[in-house]
Image (cartoon, rainbow, N blue to C red):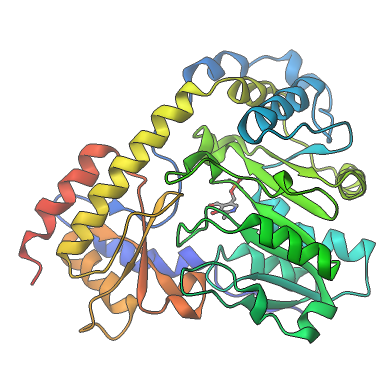
Length: 372
Ligand SMILES: Cc1ncc(COP(=O)(O)O)c(C=O)c1O
């Protein structure tokens, strides 16, 4: 057999260090995976156990209630009104990210290349590989944005899809979505904009690619981070009506459906903004605290413009980020992600997720006092 050999799951590579960090006397502080630690809004709970919502198959496209709420939220957040066939549900966005190249390639088998940010969420690359496509990392400009100028003519001609992610994971940069839209329409490439962190945009108003047009463009949104509903597995994608119609039919054939009670809960979450405002302030405070603590460790780090992560350059005396991560885990019980999990350019960086309660984040500066 010469089938696809799967790489180890990125975070599984941290398991040993996690076990060692757990031996620290004060216990493990896990800042590696970006899984929310704060409660989901309590008004959602009442609807999760309703039997009438699990009796029948839920619509794969999304219930009318879910679609209306998501559409209403999108209009309030970005000033963009979406019509019928321009929005559909997905089962969280990771499955969407992983399956989109495969589904788009069924529509356009002539193209075989998926472009994505040089430093990025690992699933963009995996999705390309699953589709039998060439995964191509796009260089970044000095300010960490995608450098469209650097994409070669051959990659442009072969491109099925380009991913953009703003605010970005792991760096927290805000991309120029107008340029992304322009580049994609000039080159006739589908652009998918992963906007799952947009509710946590700090330095500007949140932006969507659909503010610049919708031909050949998709925006992808999730409630995992916005509403601390990562366990509910729900999000949506929206944009070009031809693309949304094609993808939603394919997804219906594939049996991809968000569970009925979750669609109900999600529609309520999209109606409320107050819990998101509280969460945004929490993350901003935690990120500021982490920038300070990692500064004391000799790292270079700034407050990100968006997202949940501090992207910190490790001190020069460490040969690579794994050596830094190992020392921090073994001696201080703090686990962060080595930057090369997001691409080779991350080899001298770590990603620190602000996903522990305030008091735990605040306790880090005490733990690391003896760091020399
Ligand atoms: C950039 C990015 N996109 C998508 C996801 C997937 O989120 P979910 O599947 O929970 O919607 C994540 C999760 O961390 C992410 O960082």
